[in-house]
Image 1: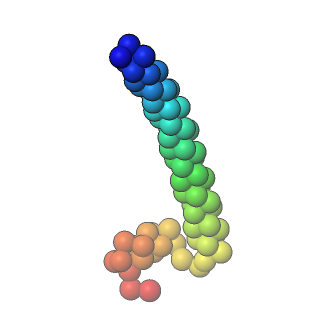
Image 2: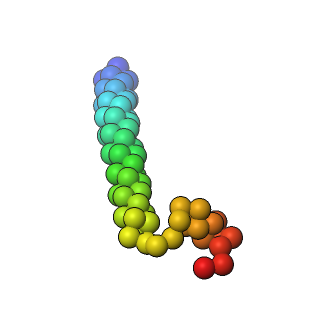
Length: 72
């Protein structure tokens, strides 16, 4: 019987270690995801700025258009 209790304690300890490892991996994956979202947002900003720079529209016209208020 003592052997069985020791065995369950060892198994519990192993599961705790797995959980800690997976939690750390999850945090790393979340951080990477957030970084990628920020990178995409910056790329979108750059594309938008380039399109605005090439257009003949004023900033106010572009903003109104994006808000759905413009009659271009």
